Length: 331
Image (tube, rainbow, N blue to C red; front, top):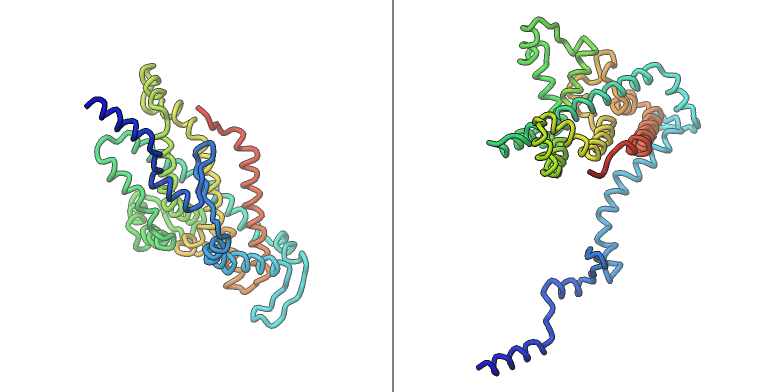
């Protein structure tokens, strides 16, 4: 019996080892693994890859590249509102904007709105992430409630907040009036800007919360335990240990909130204040809509779009070039 078993073992060792199913599929699909173990996939048939990319390229061409090129051309044209005539005016549209007092008022409103929006959003998201990280019971329900606003469309969020803070029928406005404050976003510029900031931040807090909560989970537990042994409480551990390790995440969210505040808040403004009162909440993206689709000044609207895109790219470059140097990417 020992001899038979030894012979069987030798026969098994002599047989070539059959490759696994995953290896056979990887070989047939043309994929390979590099020296670091990362999978690299490629198509042996380049025509098939192009066919698979055609739908996405078509969407980008029709809804991004063609409108972008058209807007760039219209920025240097004077267009008849009814499309009857087109005249090249060069830089006149841009120069007219720089001499326009309403445009500079819109720039000022955009700066105030974007700064307040970013501070409120990141501050509330940090508070919620800290609280969720220390909740022992019902943590899943707590996180679900925080994530619900992200599933609501911006226009619906604006309508809802506009109703809640309506000075005539809004329940929250009623409580504010009962407390002795004269709340009226339809008359006072500061009240209208506060309403727009709160509605936009409420919509974006869920997104920031996801990243910050995941970042807190990635903080090494041994460091937090060492700080606790040294006598640091939960708040001190969060401020002195966890928060410095979240700087890459905070930097990323700051850039995202900047872009969101410049471009993605049109629906909230339109549903709450429509740019009023007296243009106090007419941020740049909403002014593009007012001049282009309401006043039918297509040349000025296209020039504003060009300036807005340039401003977003410039601010993003400044953040990555100078602010990122202060960001820590290691423990």
